[in-house]
Image (cartoon, rainbow, N blue to C red; front, side, top):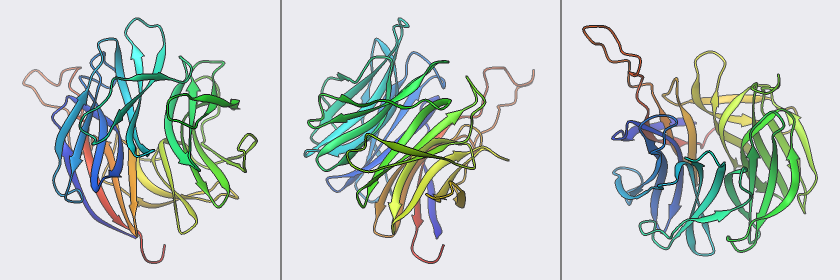
Length: 319
């Protein structure tokens, strides 16, 4: 395994974060949230495109809402179109709504469609045998997660009403491999003591899941299969907070860190594209910036700037 290159591909927003990546019609598309702060009413989803395997990038779309802070865009190809999933935190405090946009070219996008149940943040979509699956989470002391399924990319029905409620469960990543489903699920010690992540496994029709506690806390998970192994890019918390490529032991829940990307502080939320033995990764980090110095000392609002990065990793070889 080898880190071939890392480059900064966007820094123009005041806060740039929460990425995803896809290869569509021969081009790479990267989506991320752009706003004035980590949480701010002006959150918008910006889309970059590269037609030369990530060497150069151009901004091709910016999706805004007058009603909500748009967050955590996720891209997936389904039935010949590019879909963009995102969450909208409404300004009127009425709750979070998941939205879906459609595009034929990644540049021109439809109006947003409200999907899933209001209050459940549908985090990411995964295609399997002609259907879309996704896990929504509802935050709060009595929160839980819910598994959704859609056969048409428009109507999302509840497939498992209470998917997991073992602590504050939230962000997730689903993969399907050799007639099995796997779910990487984040937990945080907010409304309870549980903090290590969870790995779920299931067989068709994916209504019954068995759970294994991991040995580490994770954030912003995206999981993929390589040579029948469960790999993921996650935020790791012990020591210096960082974005890392890890392998997950499906039997023991042990996480092995194989590669650390240049990162620290406010970081992670990666997108991945596997092309043969090459892994393309988008992520964000604040490691290249620092608090500005002023004659009167640093100001409270001056924080390390988060920027968007694109990495190429060679997976071939022993690891």
